[in-house]
Length: 134
Image (cartoon, rainbow, N blue to C red; front, top):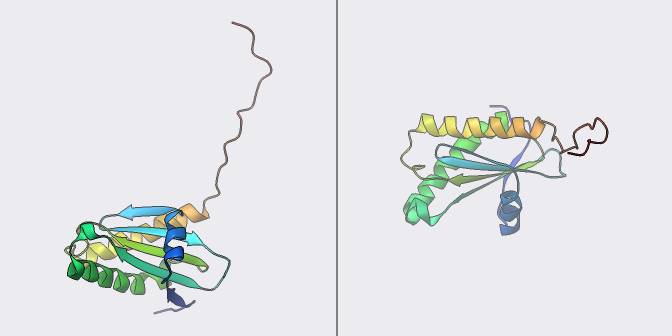
């Protein structure tokens, strides 16, 4: 398995909150947020599950499943210099493993495409001169 760059864990609340303002992609049982940082060679990942998922046992199981999916997929699909937050959605603990992997993979691919696409700023339409009075 290629480890082209190190992957670390997000642990501070401020990092999670910063990712909350970044682009996100929801697929199936997981929502993935990605935020760019200055450090070029480091990828960090954080995992969370809200109480809507279930009790502590269910939330822990959802996070364990997302951690394993991220361990398998981030080396192939993550962008160096980005923070990723994986948020469990309903069904994350009962979703078949192959489908959960597909959810994470497609979310990472979509985020990478959104990141690479140049942002188009709103520009005024070209004018053909002053409009005649009506």
